[in-house]
Image (cartoon, rainbow, N blue to C red; front, side, top):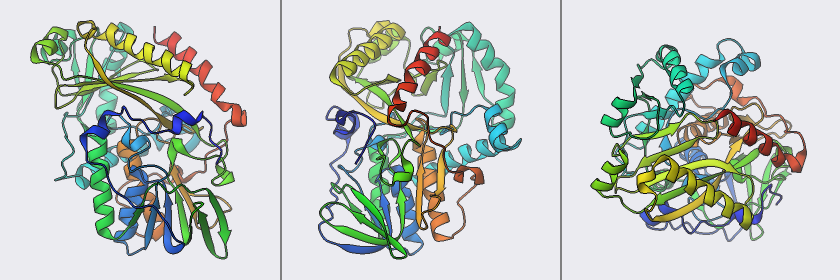
Length: 438
């Protein structure tokens, strides 16, 4: 396998908080050759949702997870089930896909949140937060939020709530904010508990789930495909690549340079007392993020811990990871000075996946009959990654779509420049982001 980052980026994250909240899932390893209608490479939110939909459509499905269940981004994210999944501004959407593209994308975003809402009803996933709150880190951004509010109501069909600094403090959203806006779409969840619910539903529907089973080779085999794990081979008529930021450059070779993984880091504190929450002015259960290009995202967890995440890491090498650890702790202390001395009990990182068009891809792989891929959620894959998995399953099975999903999301992603050196593209982008964030 050929991957873009150092091996540490793909290693287990023992200090991930979510792993402490669930009993370890037990999927067997694939130990013998076999056949299936569909093989899904990647056992995260996308792969499991595809497996669930395909199994319910009567397909024999095998899911291959390289690590433990929940090993990748699906078990490491911040648990924000919210709008998002693309980074393309409206002007770029129109230029690439037509004048109606922004509205079609907004409909898919809202449908993705509703999809996870319905699917997880009744599951114990520590759900909380009424939508998501965007906090302006400068006066200029607060003015922009006020200008944009009416357009968001038109786009999403719900009225955003604008809050000046005094109103934010009264709502328990205190901090150095110039204002904020809550859009009442989305909710927070425990991603490992959601993943466990998905796995149970997929298994109950008849899908076969295998862990510690890394797909190492993929080749055409007659009118189907053969997936080689090093210990066993699976033959299938169809294969879905659902590995997102953990993809290999050569599985298949078509994928080379079409994804740009980026590191995201998270810290979690010990449980905060009511007095400590009051001292910082933050006792709200809202999930929130700020208006920086290199955004911070954060929320108070149900047990009183505080989760704080950020983008910006460029390497998984030890020295680089130590630097980003210092940076995230410094940013946390600057935004919440009352908690500067609070113990950080958990810290980890994971890979999000960028595509050159800045929108997800869910479609067939050109020139490879029976091969499909769904990936590229730009750091917001809880809702859209889940929804894309269900959507790609309908393409593979020829069944009805579960909701709106623009056809142009099946447009094959273009390659990034610089090939295996394309990670260097992130450095100037981050420097530019830091300049605009001042």
